[in-house]
Image (cartoon, rainbow, N blue to C red; front, side):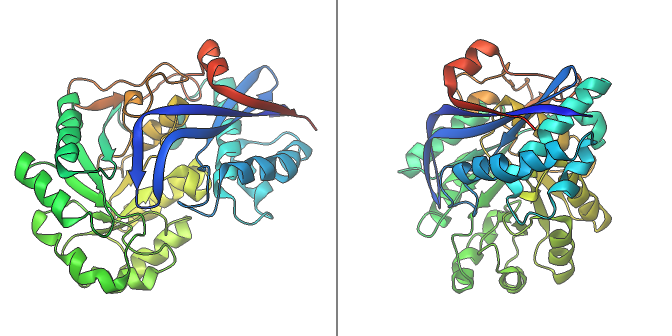
Length: 369
């Protein structure tokens, strides 16, 4: 497929409520979209990098810069290519997985639209709908947290994830268990906020029968996770530590994790995400699809990914309304039992609504070979 041009578009998406984690609070998402034009079709990609490099080393201004200066020119110069070749073309450039993933996603979307195939079919999805969990940020008080969880359960979410940090861990988890019972699927996410010295504190979460504790230690401290796993009954899930199928295989072999969170943007794209899925399935390790507060574009691709056979835990594939009062696509809405339908149309199966996209656009630039 021959690309004729690439558009980089910045949009500002206000969140329905502030979202606080151990690394900061977000009120508006500054999002970079990538649109590729090829023959008679276009394709969309979404970069999940945040405004500042606190979740990862990547941030949105750097993603736009590396796309503009290196990645887009390299793909345009390469000539007609299949989407699975994008990673190979960009391999000489180190890092910047989120920027690479956005460009690959856009090329794949265009290719699949041209061929009349869906993301779900391309990735090997086996489900027509997927169960949805919700991520609940750190709150100012336990009563506020309980009200938020109550609201999400009323909306139909089938699993709750609580963000935690030192000083906000055992107390909120205990409160949620006491209020909503032991049958509620519940997990926590530390986003690297702890060290191995906190092992005794983290072990205090064991009695609450959590599904998992996500990324308790620094992303580079894989051996620390191995040691921590030997001190906790709660299964450890790795997120930030897993950036490739090779990482996943090594972490599993070392015993650093019992579960893996797969975020396509973090690992460089949906093809690498599929490879991580395959590695985990081969080793009997459950996987689930994480979220990065995506718009409907990224959400459509994630829902397709979450429909693959190894995704046997509910992901953070929440409805559009969890984060945005108005999405840039037709919104994803939970059905009566907390599931989202997997898009079946060509490519992502949906596209931005022009008027809504125009409302939130803050800048555009167009690149040609």
